[in-house]
Length: 304
Ligand code: GLN
Image 1 (cartoon, rainbow, N blue to C red):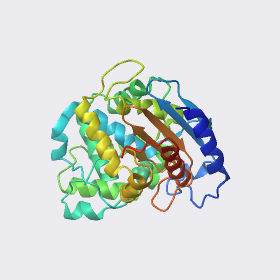
Image 2 (cartoon, helix red, strand yellow):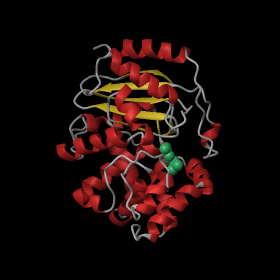
Image 3 (cartoon, helix red, strand yellow):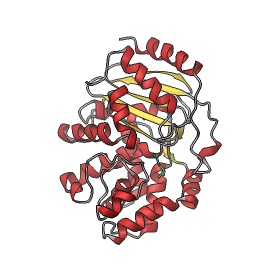
Image 4 (cartoon, rainbow, N blue to C red):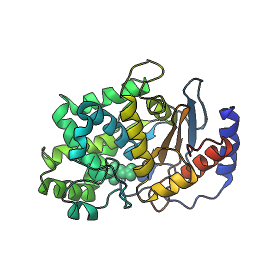
């Protein structure tokens, strides 16, 4: 399959189209981004990858890092995780508070903000130096030692993070956060503020397309069973109240972030990452969704 030609052709078509989306502005530092940025990179397991546009420029991966938090915590705690959160789709926005109240502080799944905050709490208890150790884990997946947190973005979100604070305090009130709320939020905002290019992002998710093993280093990160379960959770929960739409139109396990990134994997074949900062009403990249829909149609590679 000549993925390079295909993504070039599709990108040409996508870039021509009007984009009705808006850049996320509730994190002021994210609102400064050029809304017309665009990059895509596809990385087959057994070939060199190829990219189009700003595919080496770093951007804020935001909620995409929830999958990496899940991978790290699941590797350490296994099925015990499901005592602290569920794995059902929420059908609600990423920062919704409503379910949390009637489900008594047990987040619906790990890929909404509430679930990721509980994962941060778990990792604070399990890692000697949570921020350094988590970054080390991400660098290992990406085989790239230059990945880091963008402190300005973390700080900007912390200053305006009223909804996330409310979520964290509500979980705490039900006894499902062990550490101080401020400490959990600080770790969470940093994790969201990790920066990567689409090339690095596609590379760091390739272990999920490869049965839990990083192809380049051959290091096993997760068992095959856990890898499949993470892919299942991405499929059902990766796009909040638009998870059905993504399964329907794209047909791959994936995850979005309000920085405008989307990553998706085709188990056994490839990972792909796209960046286009303007978001649709559900907080997912407008052009990113369109590109991936066209990619799986052109390559006949939906998993269904
Ligand atoms: N840091 C963002 C938040 O917590 C992440 C949300 C997202 O990317 N969907 O609101």
